[in-house]
Length: 154
Image (cartoon, rainbow, N blue to C red; front, side, top):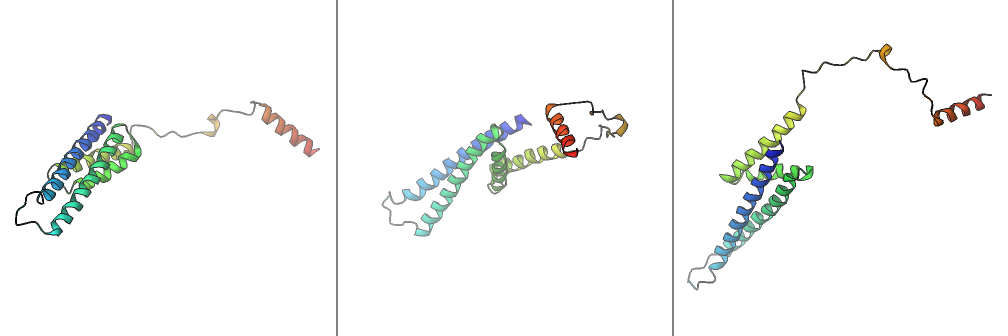
């Protein structure tokens, strides 16, 4: 299971680097239209949409890098974030979908194996006659309590 989490963390780091490159490409393409003095410039809504999309990808990629590093170090909090990012990655076809499915599979496999009942073990029944007798054990605390009880009862 540990090797699968290391692979999962590395996959999230790799796909996050791809998202950063795509985000930079979107910004570069949208804002390079102003560089060329062509007559047709894209409408303002394309700039706004591109900026929002680029920011969204950049934010997901930063979360993916940090959660990938945490998952590689088996940090429980980053495992939760990695699972959430795996569900978000399902949107990004085809690579993100594969990473998202693998993320869900790794964490579901971990959850199922943790909650799987073990039928090989026999249930232990405790008999009262088999319990050890601890009445002969003495300690300074128990002795002081019992001596105070004797004093109060007199």
